[in-house]
Amino acid sequence: LMAFLLGAMTTAWTVNLGLRRGWRSAYGVPLLLEAAALLLFGLHGPAIAHHAAVFTPLTVVWLCYTMGLQNAVITKVSHAEIRTTHLTGLLTDIGLALGRALYINRNTDIPPVRTDRARLRLQLGLVAAFFGGALAGAWGFKAWGYVSTLPLAALLLLVVWRPLAADLWGRPATRQA
Image (cartoon, rainbow, N blue to C red; front, side, top):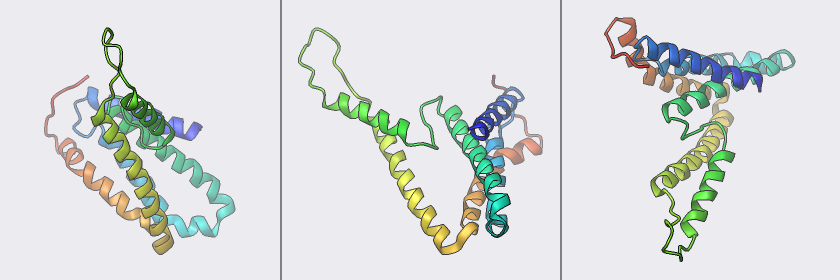
Protein backbone atom coordinates (compact mmCIF):
# COMPACT_ATOMS: atom_id res chain seq x y z
CA LEU A 1 0.00 0.00 0.00
CA MET A 2 2.80 2.40 0.84
CA ALA A 3 4.54 1.68 -2.49
CA PHE A 4 1.30 2.34 -4.41
CA LEU A 5 0.81 5.55 -2.43
CA LEU A 6 4.39 6.62 -3.12
CA GLY A 7 3.88 5.99 -6.83
CA ALA A 8 0.77 8.18 -6.84
CA MET A 9 2.64 10.87 -4.87
CA THR A 10 5.51 10.74 -7.37
CA THR A 11 3.06 11.29 -10.22
CA ALA A 12 1.43 14.24 -8.44
CA TRP A 13 4.78 15.83 -7.70
CA THR A 14 6.28 15.35 -11.18
CA VAL A 15 3.14 16.37 -13.08
CA ASN A 16 2.60 19.49 -10.96
CA LEU A 17 6.27 20.44 -11.29
CA GLY A 18 6.13 19.90 -15.04
CA LEU A 19 2.91 21.86 -15.50
CA ARG A 20 4.18 24.78 -13.44
CA ARG A 21 7.39 24.86 -15.48
CA GLY A 22 5.54 24.57 -18.78
CA TRP A 23 6.91 21.15 -19.74
CA ARG A 24 5.18 19.43 -22.63
CA SER A 25 6.20 16.15 -21.02
CA ALA A 26 4.61 16.88 -17.63
CA TYR A 27 2.34 13.83 -17.89
CA GLY A 28 5.05 11.86 -19.64
CA VAL A 29 7.54 11.88 -16.76
CA PRO A 30 5.57 9.31 -14.71
CA LEU A 31 5.13 7.26 -17.90
CA LEU A 32 8.89 7.39 -18.40
CA LEU A 33 9.36 6.07 -14.86
CA GLU A 34 6.79 3.37 -15.57
CA ALA A 35 8.61 2.39 -18.77
CA ALA A 36 11.88 2.16 -16.83
CA ALA A 37 10.20 -0.07 -14.23
CA LEU A 38 8.86 -2.37 -16.95
CA LEU A 39 12.27 -2.47 -18.65
CA LEU A 40 13.94 -3.45 -15.38
CA PHE A 41 11.32 -6.09 -14.74
CA GLY A 42 11.56 -7.49 -18.27
CA LEU A 43 15.34 -7.51 -18.45
CA HIS A 44 16.03 -8.77 -14.93
CA GLY A 45 13.17 -11.25 -14.68
CA PRO A 46 15.39 -14.35 -14.85
CA ALA A 47 17.49 -13.01 -11.95
CA ILE A 48 14.29 -12.30 -10.04
CA ALA A 49 13.12 -15.88 -10.60
CA HIS A 50 16.54 -17.34 -9.78
CA HIS A 51 16.83 -15.45 -6.48
CA ALA A 52 13.10 -15.40 -5.64
CA ALA A 53 13.57 -15.28 -1.87
CA VAL A 54 15.41 -11.96 -2.12
CA PHE A 55 13.90 -10.33 -5.20
CA THR A 56 10.22 -11.33 -5.12
CA PRO A 57 9.27 -9.03 -2.21
CA LEU A 58 11.22 -6.16 -3.81
CA THR A 59 9.60 -6.85 -7.16
CA VAL A 60 6.11 -6.76 -5.64
CA VAL A 61 6.91 -3.40 -4.01
CA TRP A 62 8.35 -2.07 -7.31
CA LEU A 63 5.30 -3.20 -9.29
CA CYS A 64 2.94 -1.65 -6.72
CA TYR A 65 4.87 1.62 -7.04
CA THR A 66 4.48 1.36 -10.82
CA MET A 67 0.74 0.78 -10.48
CA GLY A 68 0.51 3.89 -8.31
CA LEU A 69 2.29 5.90 -11.01
CA GLN A 70 -0.05 4.54 -13.69
CA ASN A 71 -3.27 5.02 -11.79
CA ALA A 72 -2.37 8.55 -10.73
CA VAL A 73 -1.32 9.78 -14.18
CA ILE A 74 -4.58 8.57 -15.75
CA THR A 75 -6.53 9.99 -12.82
CA LYS A 76 -4.86 13.40 -13.30
CA VAL A 77 -5.28 13.40 -17.09
CA SER A 78 -8.95 12.41 -16.86
CA HIS A 79 -9.70 14.81 -13.95
CA ALA A 80 -10.51 11.83 -11.66
CA GLU A 81 -12.95 10.24 -14.13
CA ILE A 82 -10.87 7.11 -14.79
CA ARG A 83 -8.80 4.76 -12.65
CA THR A 84 -6.68 2.15 -14.39
CA THR A 85 -5.39 -0.31 -11.81
CA HIS A 86 -8.57 -1.67 -10.27
CA LEU A 87 -11.94 -2.92 -11.45
CA THR A 88 -14.09 -2.48 -8.36
CA GLY A 89 -14.69 1.23 -8.88
CA LEU A 90 -15.44 0.74 -12.56
CA LEU A 91 -17.87 -2.09 -11.85
CA THR A 92 -19.58 0.01 -9.17
CA ASP A 93 -19.96 2.91 -11.62
CA ILE A 94 -21.27 0.54 -14.32
CA GLY A 95 -23.79 -0.92 -11.87
CA LEU A 96 -25.00 2.54 -10.89
CA ALA A 97 -25.27 3.61 -14.54
CA LEU A 98 -27.18 0.46 -15.49
CA GLY A 99 -29.51 1.01 -12.54
CA ARG A 100 -30.18 4.57 -13.73
CA ALA A 101 -30.67 3.36 -17.32
CA LEU A 102 -33.28 0.80 -16.22
CA TYR A 103 -35.08 3.17 -13.86
CA ILE A 104 -38.61 3.99 -15.01
CA ASN A 105 -39.30 7.73 -14.71
CA ARG A 106 -43.03 7.94 -13.93
CA ASN A 107 -43.26 11.26 -12.09
CA THR A 108 -42.96 14.09 -14.60
CA ASP A 109 -42.95 16.78 -11.90
CA ILE A 110 -39.29 16.17 -11.02
CA PRO A 111 -36.24 15.89 -13.25
CA PRO A 112 -35.89 12.39 -14.72
CA VAL A 113 -33.21 9.92 -13.67
CA ARG A 114 -30.80 9.50 -16.58
CA THR A 115 -27.49 7.83 -17.25
CA ASP A 116 -24.50 9.15 -19.15
CA ARG A 117 -24.37 6.61 -21.97
CA ALA A 118 -21.05 7.87 -23.35
CA ARG A 119 -19.40 7.43 -19.96
CA LEU A 120 -21.00 4.00 -19.58
CA ARG A 121 -19.53 2.95 -22.96
CA LEU A 122 -16.11 4.21 -21.86
CA GLN A 123 -16.34 2.26 -18.60
CA LEU A 124 -17.46 -0.92 -20.38
CA GLY A 125 -14.55 -0.47 -22.80
CA LEU A 126 -12.12 -0.11 -19.89
CA VAL A 127 -13.42 -3.32 -18.28
CA ALA A 128 -13.04 -5.10 -21.63
CA ALA A 129 -9.50 -3.72 -21.88
CA PHE A 130 -8.72 -5.04 -18.38
CA PHE A 131 -9.82 -8.53 -19.38
CA GLY A 132 -8.10 -8.35 -22.76
CA GLY A 133 -4.91 -7.11 -21.13
CA ALA A 134 -5.05 -9.80 -18.46
CA LEU A 135 -5.44 -12.53 -21.07
CA ALA A 136 -2.74 -11.06 -23.32
CA GLY A 137 -0.41 -10.61 -20.35
CA ALA A 138 -0.91 -14.18 -19.13
CA TRP A 139 -0.44 -15.56 -22.62
CA GLY A 140 2.62 -13.37 -23.25
CA PHE A 141 4.21 -14.33 -19.96
CA LYS A 142 3.55 -18.01 -20.58
CA ALA A 143 4.96 -17.81 -24.11
CA TRP A 144 7.93 -15.46 -23.59
CA GLY A 145 8.37 -14.92 -19.87
CA TYR A 146 9.53 -11.64 -18.38
CA VAL A 147 10.57 -10.14 -21.73
CA SER A 148 6.88 -9.89 -22.63
CA THR A 149 6.90 -6.58 -20.74
CA LEU A 150 9.49 -5.05 -23.07
CA PRO A 151 7.03 -4.15 -25.87
CA LEU A 152 4.86 -2.41 -23.27
CA ALA A 153 7.86 -0.40 -22.07
CA ALA A 154 8.71 0.45 -25.69
CA LEU A 155 5.14 1.63 -26.30
CA LEU A 156 5.30 3.91 -23.25
CA LEU A 157 8.64 5.30 -24.44
CA LEU A 158 7.14 5.92 -27.88
CA VAL A 159 4.22 7.81 -26.33
CA VAL A 160 6.44 10.01 -24.15
CA TRP A 161 9.33 10.53 -26.59
CA ARG A 162 8.00 13.48 -28.58
CA PRO A 163 7.02 15.78 -25.68
CA LEU A 164 10.15 14.77 -23.76
CA ALA A 165 12.35 15.56 -26.78
CA ALA A 166 10.63 18.95 -27.13
CA ASP A 167 11.43 19.74 -23.50
CA LEU A 168 15.01 18.50 -23.75
CA TRP A 169 15.74 20.51 -26.88
CA GLY A 170 14.21 23.66 -25.46
CA ARG A 171 11.07 24.19 -27.51
CA PRO A 172 8.90 26.53 -25.47
CA ALA A 173 5.47 25.39 -24.32
CA THR A 174 2.60 27.37 -22.96
CA ARG A 175 2.71 27.72 -19.20
CA GLN A 176 -0.09 26.03 -17.22
CA ALA A 177 -0.92 26.01 -13.54
